[in-house]
Length: 251
Image 1: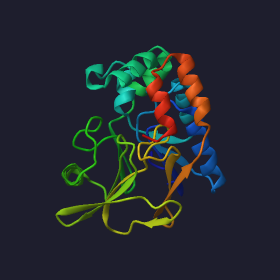
Image 2: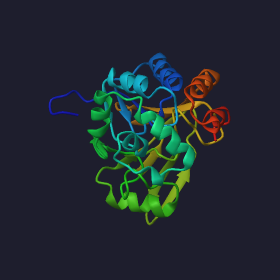
Image 3: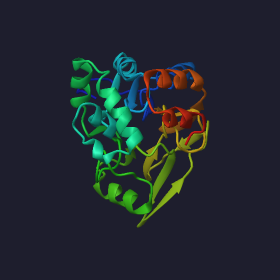
Image 4: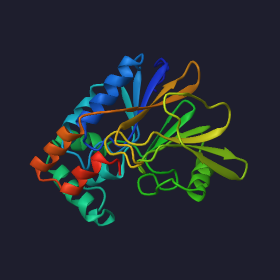
């Protein structure tokens, strides 16, 4: 936050919206019904895969927020080669490029790789490789902990929710319990809220975190949204059918 800006009391933490406006809107509405939030922390990949990149960018920009860039964001503005993407993701990236205004491209191009917010560092992939590496195992987790300058790290990219504790020379990965207070304490932790727009943990519901700064705890939530409406829009736009189909299965 800028100097002199009041520190937020409640933070909506989300990642990997992937141009899924229905999921994004459902998350924002659900968080507002649970007491609201002062700011959104977005961990990257606002665009890619889904049918509403411009609308999702506009929705985030209408809210107080801090955002970092993801690999699909970079691809959509020509800052990452599509050879790094599988054919379906590359096709969606090419489509997304044609949907963005210059204002949207400038916004995405200006997003940082990392951001520090109080006790948290925000990054899309990992601190070792902010937009490419998937932080999913002990080796990659340890590498990020070694580079971490704050007690806590928030990541996205894998679309898999988890809580990772640093315990001496080891790391322990745990599933995020839904709807329960997650007391962080003084341990060094990395947390992934999963994905808003394209979950990959077998649960098609959108996922997000609320951080209560006064109590210093997190709560993880899942929320249903109109998957079929998004699928219809994707197919009407000519996006690859498998990308639409996977939304129903959370894979």
